[in-house]
Length: 243
Image 1 (cartoon, rainbow, N blue to C red):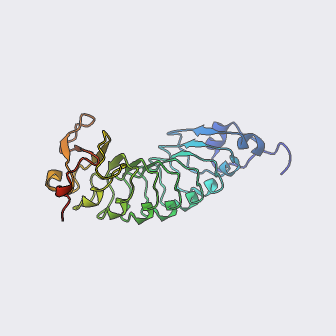
Image 2: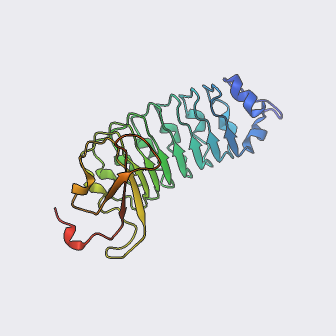
Image 3: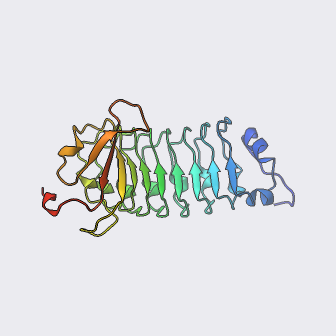
């Protein structure tokens, strides 16, 4: 590279937002925030090797390959774009928050190795299979609203979960969630887990025999039929755990 050379940006709007930087200048950038700017191509961001936060929602981005080597990224917010392939994110092992709501994603297997993830939002996509999430033990918030999910058994061992949204899917069996508890059996805890279950095809969570659920209208939403289900972890009587 020639000292002082400028980066080639396919997207002139991205170049303008970043101030037409040199590779050296862009390598020191820690955050990029540009919602709704009509961005369509991230070419040039491969030089942002020190980037920690990338927030580009409400754009027209489809190709994430320029992010492949940005291994310092801790937060990505790319909701409401045109993304279908998340494989360029597979090596971003420091990611803690990933928000990809309202895209075109059906395959989340490239995310299987992102074990630092604490928040994953993939609402309004085309996801059906959840096994790639099995080893993401640090997940605290997982939003899966409005996909094509039928089986949530892969979530059974995600004991760090505190906030789960499985609304508007094709789920009929929620018993895999019964043992999601961060404390040892028999211990009393004030821990509350919130699960959103709006329109997933189950008639009433209170009929599930494996835990004590407390359904009620959510104050956070006025949507008809939307329910916040909270249960006190590890407060289930031992004699209620039966098939």
